[in-house]
Image: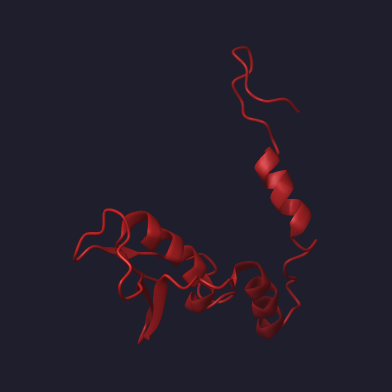
Length: 116
């Protein structure tokens, strides 16, 4: 398929970004017969990246805090700002810890603490 044009404003499907992502993901991320442990192991490989040395990850009773590391001041940081990040997966396929990498990017971009 082709991309959008004045005659055909619909976007390209699948997009080049989707095609590139699909090329590096396993053919099947999970199967209905997989145990929860198998599903989590598969999704951890996709999501569970190191958030980096410029953030601190702190477990909380019902989630996870991701904050700028001591001495590191993100651009446009503002005291008291918090982002509430609700991740996908219904808290079944991946625990909050596997989303710390994504939350770290939000910390860097906003200067806010992030609660996952």
